[in-house]
Length: 555
Image 1 (spheres, helix red, strand yellow):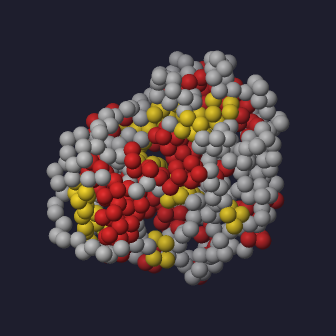
Image 2: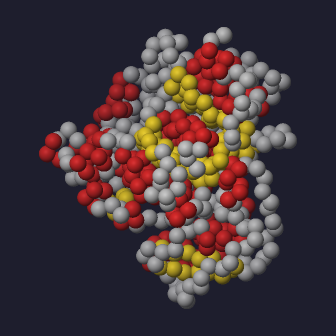
Image 3: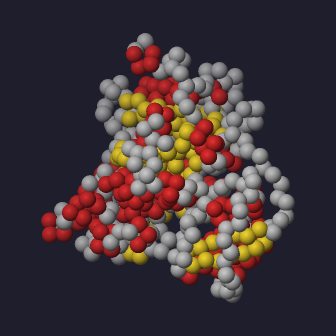
C-alpha cells in the first residue's frame, strides 16, 4: 500500500464540520438559488445560441451553442466605490464576482459591519480572461488599470477583500476545471485551523471569445448538438458556459451559536493528484479520483456507502466512464443493494469550467434543502462501456426524493481538472430547526433601495417570491425578520403591513406599480424571539454598461 492510501485510511480523524450559510448564484437561466431550483425542477436546458453581442458563432467548432448569462457588461460601480474608467478596465469576471459575493453575504444574513475588519478569508477561482485577450495585445490600450483589472487575475480576490474590508487570507486558486472545488477545500482547511473565522468562496467563468471553443472543438471534446449528455450512450462532448457562484462558509458550531442560517454542512473535503498513473497528461485517472474520494470520506468520518447522491463532474465525454468506475469502486462496498443517485448540472447549463465545482455545490445544497434530486437531462440510453449491472449508481430520469434513512442525507460533489487535479466534497443536510406555525399576526416588512426605480424593482421581486410555492416553507415572521434586520437600509424606503404571504404580495405589487405612496417608514420593529434569517431573492442592482471600446463584444 502506498503512502497516499495510508494517509487517507480510517485512522485519519474527521474534521470539524463547516456550515454553508449563504449562496449567490448567476448561472445560465438562473439568478439566485430560487431560480436555479426552479430551473432544475422544470428540467430545463438553459444552453442556447451564442449571443450576437459575444462573437461570430460560425467560427466555433460546436455549432455556436453554449450556456450564457444575459448581461456581462452591466456593473454597479458606484455601489463598490469604483470609478467608471477603472470599472471599464476590469475583467467582467471580477465585476460579476463582486456583485455575486455581495448577494451571498446578504443571503447569509450578514451585514457589512459584522464582516469589516474580521478574519474573513477570500478564496477565488477565475476562468481565463477572455476580456484581456480581446484588447490586451494592443499596447496602446494597456495601462495599470487594465493590467491590474484583467491580466492580474489574483486581483479578483484582493478586490473582494478590499470592498468588504476583510482581513483574512485572500488568494486565487487555479486547478483548471477543478479550481472552485479546490477553493472550497482550502477554505474549509483555513476555517478549521483558525486562519479564517468566516470564508467567502467564489468563482467566475465567462465565455467572451471563441478561441477556447475553437481549441476544444478541434480536440473533438465539444458536443456537436451543444448538449452535455452525462452517462448517455450518445454523449459526444461538453458545451462551454458562463457561471458565477459564491458561497459563505463558517464553522458549524459558530454558525449555530450566532444564529446564522445553516443551509447545509460540509463535513469532508479532499484534493488529490493523478500523477503519472494514467495514459497521458490530459487523461483522467480512476486511481486519482478514488484517492480524493476516500480521503474525503475519511475526513468526513463517514462510510462511502452512506452517500445518497453524487453531483458528478459529469461532462458528457469519454471521461464519464472513468468517473463512474471510480465512484463504483468507492461507493459500492457495503451498500447492500441500495443504489446511489448520480447526476450532472452540466446537462442543464453546460460546463462553467473554473466555476463548475461551486455550481455543483449550489445544486447539492438545494437538493439537501428540498430532499429531492432533480432529473439529469439527456440520459436516455446508458453508456455501453459501463457495466450497469455491477454499478450501484442510478441516473435520475424523474425527480427522485432523497431516501429516508433515519439519518441526515449525504450528498457528494465530485470534480476534476485537465491538470490531473481531483477534488471531492461531502455534505450532509443541515441540523433540523424548529418550524413554528404561522401565528397569523400582523407584521411590518421594510424594504429600501438606492432609487425609486430600485424600490419598485425590489417590491416586484419580493412580491413574485412571496406568491410562489418556494416561499410557503418560510414563515412571515422569518421573512420580515430578514428584511428588517439583515438588509442594509438605503435612502428610498417603504413598508407594508400584512398577515399572510398573499397579503404581503398584494401590497408589494402596489408599491411595484407605483399605485401606493408609502407613508413615513417606521423604524425596524424589535426582533421577535426565535426569528431567524432566511433566503430571499437577490437585491436589484443599479447597473450601467462598462466595456472598453477596444473590446469587440457586448456592444
